[in-house]
Length: 387
Image (spheres, rainbow, N blue to C red):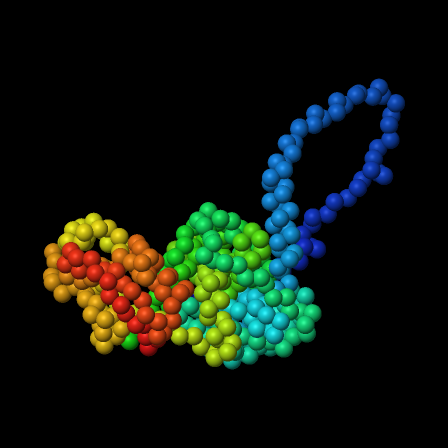
């Protein structure tokens, strides 16, 4: 699946006038009574309907209120490019007309139109993009009465199982609201920035959710139950598609955490770009038992270093990758196992990456706790910017 959820879709409306669905009241032409004895017809027995639980009614009212509160700040984005047209979602970031969306929604755009819920429309200009997080900022010239900035939450406070709500424009159906839960936190996906050694850098600290999102939801907000934006919907994983070949929701979607947005978007507005911290290592996120045994690692958790970028920050700090062959093809033993950053224990590479991009920048120094040849040591490392 292409790393994009945005689509351009025309929806044909079916006229109902000629379908024969006509209801006629024939009471005025009913036959007259002939004087035969009337037969009493027993009244139908009413089936009791259980009342909704107060908690359900309260949740329903909360969702209605949430939608009415935030809907004015959510927009549809129509994009024209040399490859044709596409569509995505976005939301109002501030009262200056800045709109947050996905990079892949506006990538290659030659013309961008923003449609507001009120019916107001405006062309937009590109302000800045971040291929690493898949974020972009565009700007419209709109009256103050059309700009309803959304309230930002704190993605660090999210917990698995928490209710979340997505609102956007799936398949061009503007203002669509769906509900689900936080399925997992701290996920990673490939970013849209190619790394010097081939492949792509990783985008981290993603929220996994089962709130239904589909093509066209890209760039739209993910809310907590209080109506605060906690993420920006980015991608889905699916093996299903509709009649036109577009991917459809399978219950596994991903959103960029709002704390990443808080770091990236101000930089995009001020400078047009954002610099990420760079360690210069590769790692396998989760090792199976046979790999752990082959590497002779003393514990199951940590980020095992599989390669080090030459003359990168990790190389200069003396971090080691594996060099010795094991019985598993392509798996080299002897590398460092990173088990903590700045004293914070990490279980895997996803946690390492989330910590870095949420808390550090180029030029910052971090303290790695590593296990090397059975010995635990601490190594300071000064971060660069991603090349």
